[in-house]
Length: 115
Length: 115
Image 1 (tube, rainbow over the protein chains, first blue to last red):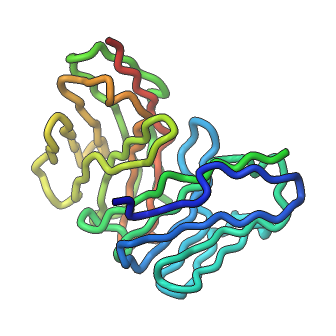
Image 2 (tube, chains in turn blue, brown):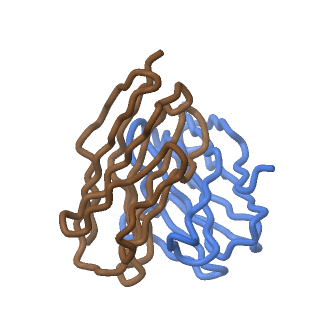
């Protein structure tokens, strides 16, 4: 029944060891987003894809990369995780850009811990 | 740039009572959309209610309703007959087609419903 699926729910990695988080969707939506959410804070947009067009937020660190090999899947790669990257990572989708009739749909998130 | 402010970091309400969460925003746009999202502990962020700026009528979804005051740039959420399952972080969010199309979130309000 889940429409935006994030795997894994919990991820532990070592300081500096690359890690990939995955998101898939069954909604056939054009836009996929990655957010970083730290404890009790609002989600912070890292980047989004509109179809194959990649859009990076100006303040997203170079350490964060993304891939979208097809409509259904989108990956977040953290090349050299630091302690400050420990957070919940949320994937979201929308049919087109957000309107009241095209809201964002979120996945359950992946909680990333850095040892 | 758009900003969204939620002035109540935490609130509590007794079960079956009514609670209002406040949200103000700042924009120079005339066409925009407002949302309230709910994020239960360790669970998915879900859309609660949405409002188009051009509609004067306040949106209502079952026990959830908004008080949209466009001139005051205020968009409060009223939860009637509060239930234990309403315990969550609530985020107010804004987007405008002519202002980047991305969601701008407020800082969130943590709501605790007490039995």
